[in-house]
Image (cartoon, rainbow, N blue to C red):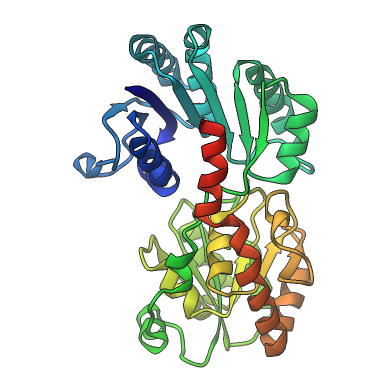
Length: 371
């Protein structure tokens, strides 16, 4: 039986979110499926990975220099050498680095090493430190990569020109289950009441961890600048900046219009009862949350950074702004609040544009790589 090892930093927030369809594909195609990642469930017993024959719970750290990662490298090396995998598919920066390093000896025996870059940390406009730290590491690791898979066009272009992987491919995202969002059943009145927004309000939605990169602050400042009590900002996600964002909203006088809902399992329904999706990140490999919003028929207002600009086309299906440009975010939120026809036009374009990111299409492309 053929064997595959899928490597990523964590289970709950990565393997379970992005890779179950691929594990299923491997099982259906005769592979014994192994997964190496850290069990990041609060209740460890909840960690149950579908289509996985063997799970290696390894203490990956997101910070590359933590000593646990050296232990993980040694364990991965032993696992790979013992199992003689046909294929190893690595994900996430640390998982990708440790997995490829641990597979060096295995490659000499015929193991194929794949790495999906879910957005390089170096990109046009990235901080210099990102280029100094991440770029040389990824360039060096590319020589130990049989197929380097990129999910946005800027990363693909750079990898194709600068890196020495045997093969470089562009795949549009990890695949979106469009029907899950397009066909969701929802009760607009009931859901709006549940999350605490008025029935006739204009709802802006963001989905993502409450951290600096996701940049929810700029939207809070933008709606404060507009000063319209009918505009409400809803955020699904939790993170270290929750208290800061609540305090900021109070200081700006929009605390009654900002709703931090925490982690939610009903994001498709919340998308459907919203009017606009805001995605103001400083960095995104691509941004599945925005693609999900597109599938629900929401217009976009986004930052103009790599990955996002692959699908957020300024003036067509949304508006692009510099991540720090409060005035531009404010201007375009106000434009879409006023212009219902423009919102509807952008929504229709998004429903069409998101089709190329369909899970079925992406799986077909990945199948060509795997075989």
